[in-house]
Length: 293
Image 1 (cartoon, rainbow, N blue to C red):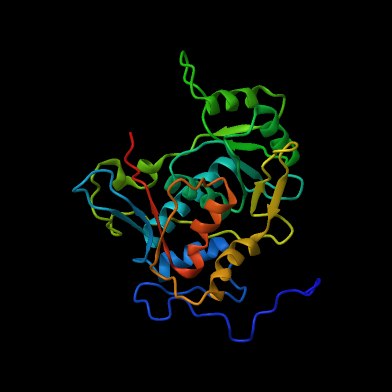
Image 2: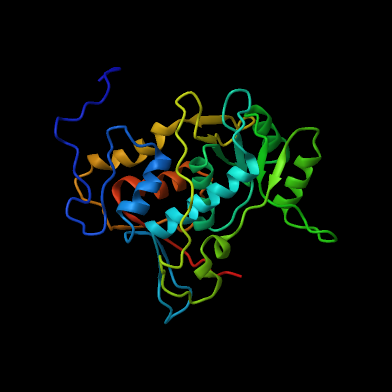
């Protein structure tokens, strides 16, 4: 085969969700950015399931997070981030916001999507990295904002909190942002079992998605760092949609199929690609219960 690129036959791409009553496929020919697709589904596929929270105990019912509930939570948080970070560019590019925290998947995805919806670059950091590795990644990407937390006064805190505290002591312009967890992002999850979702009482965000810049990444991931310091890998807006478009070359219609994220980490390409590509082809992600406190 040599260096000849793989060619798919004309017409090979399958139509996903052709007959599904709750899913409207977004245009995939380029007019919508990924943040706009997130907004699109809140408007055009409001009752379609995005995530299924599995029950922990026998007799409990699963909890469905619809695209409308997810989209509203994302853009409410995006509005909060814009107030916190502002719209000023850093070296001509949108601010990079690192995530040095490891909440459950629903919270993590909401944080990450809100960063991109607000017009910033999301940078999920593996909590397995050492302090020098994280310090290297933040400096290499000129990251000025870090989502995480530090130990409370008089308490040792977690290893990640101790690392965040160390990073803030470094002579840099790094600023810590503490974001709300699932029970504030999704108010009905503050009690368990939660009440059914009611869009009438769920506040509607007041902002629209920011336009993506082709000269700046919307997402940065990093290599494993197994042989040297981990290296940042910038991805532009096209990467998000490409993850979903890949499913169009499968023989089966995957819409409404359930895929279990379970232990897939959201800071890893596998967890991100599986969860976020559902924005294109309409599958639902099954996760463990959020009720763990």
